[in-house]
Length: 279
Length: 351
Image (cartoon, rainbow over all chains, first blue to last red; front, side):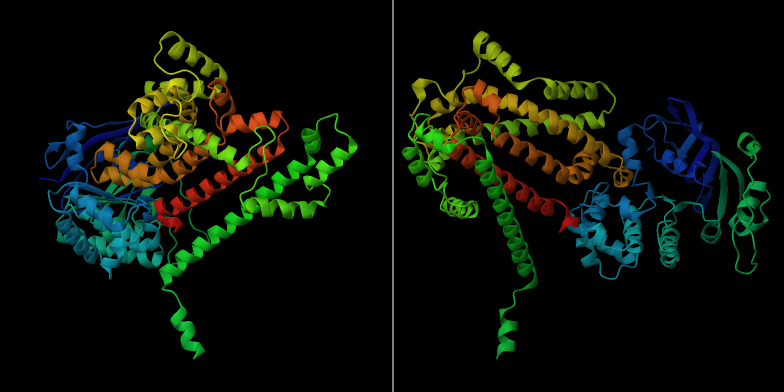
C-alpha cells in the first residue's frame, strides 16, 4: 500500500477579485520513495504540501476526491485527530530556519516539545531523545546547542535542528518545502545528504519541494513537474534530461551548465494551454 | 606585582557584564534626570508667572518685593540658580508649596500614593481584560468577536473621560448605589488605619481592617475601572495587531506542523513572542496613568498628583508644579528603563 494517495487535489482561495486556484486537480501517490515536486514560484508546489497537512487556513479551501494516508482518508478526520497526524505521521521542514524556529524558545525546548506532543514520556527521556536526534543530524556539541536560541546558530545548523525536530516523533512522511533554498550553496548538499540518510534509514516517504532541478534529480527517485497548479509531467529523476514536456525542457534549458557554456541562456517560454490541458 | 594585581582584580565575565550594564543604565538614568531637571528649571524661570508676586501679593511695597526676591534666590544669575536648584533637589528639597504652606516633598508623599493606587488598579484592569480581548480579536479576525472588540476599543478611545465618569457616578453611585461616591473613603472610615504606604487598600490590608478595605475598594473601583477601560482600549488594539503579526510568522506554521493544539500555538508560541512589545505598551499606559489623570481625579475628588499639580498650576504655585513635574518625569524615566531591562529578560536576541 502506498503511504500517501492523492487524487484530484484542489486548493483555492476566495478573494474579492474572485476565486484564485493555486492547485488545480493534481493526483499522485507516494511510496517509500523520494518524490520531488518542481515548479516555479506560484506553481502550487508549497500549497500542495500544506494541503496534505490540512494547514491551509480560510479563506483557503482544499478539496480532493481522495487524500489518504496509509489508506486512511485525511479529509474526514476531525481537527483533533488531524493533530495526531501532524508531526507524528506527516511532518514538514520549511524553507528558512531563521523564520521557522521560534526565536524566543531554546532549541532544546522546541525539539523536546515536538517529541512530548506525541509521546507519553518524561522530560528527561525527551531530553535524551533530543540529544540523540541532534547527534543524528551531525551536530557536534548537542548539549550546548540544546541551550542555544535560534539566532545563535548558523543557517545550516538551524536547518539540521529543524530536521531533528521534525523527525523526532518518527513520522512516516516528511515534506521538505524548499529546505535548502535559504542556505549557502556550500552547506546545501550536506544538509540534504543528512536528511536523505535519515529518511532512507527510517523507510520514510519524502516529498521534496524545490525549484532546483539539479538538486531534485540528485536526491529524488521520481519528479513531478508542476505548472500553474497542475502536474505537467512525471518522470524518473534519473531520466529528467529525457523529459518531453516543453515546459520541463524549457526549465532544463534555462539552466547554465559548466560543461556547455552558452552566451545566452534560453528564456522560458510559457504556453497557456499547459495550464488548461491535462498532463 | 602590578600585573598580578590587575589579573586578580578582574571580575568574572558575566558579573562584569552585568555590572557594566547596571552602570550604563544608572549613567543614562542620571543624564536623563539631569535633562529633566534642566527643562523644569527653565520652564519655572521663563513662565510668565512672577513667583515673587505670588508671595508678596499685588500690593506689596517695592522693598518687600525686593527682599522676597532675594530670599527666593531670584536675584542670582541663571546658572547659579540652576546649581542651587540641583543642590536642593539632590537633598530632596523642592521648596515650600505656597498653597499648602508645607514642603512640596511632603505634599507629594501624601498625594502620590493615591495616584499610584488608582493607576496600578487601573492598569491591572486594563491588562487583565485588554490582553485577552486583543488575543481573542486576533484569533477571530473579521468575525463578530473582533467587531465587538473593535467597538469596545473605539468607545474607549473616543468617549471623553469626564463624561463617562459623570455617567458612571450617576448610574453606579447615584441610581444603583453599587459603589462608593467621590473621594477615597467615606468620612466615617477616614483615619481608622495607620498610614504606612499611603495606599489605603494596602494599609488596611496590612492592618487587617477589612471594613476599611471594603469601603476603599468601593470608592476606587469606579475610577479605576474607567482608567482601566481607557488603557484596555489601547492595550487590546495593540495586542491584536502584535498577535496578528506573530500568528502570520513561519514559526507558527512550524508549531502547527508539530501537531500542537491551537491553544498552545497561540498562548505559548505566539504569545511568548509578543511579550516584549506588549510590555512596552503596558508600561507606557501605566506611566500615563501615573502622571495623574487630572480629569478623573477631579471628577472623583481623588486627591492624587494630577489634581495636586493642576491646583498648584492654577494658583501659580511654581514650587509645587515643578516638584510634581520632576517626580512624575522621574517615574516615567524609571519605568522606561525598567521596561528596557525586562526586554532583555523576555527576548534572548536583545541580551
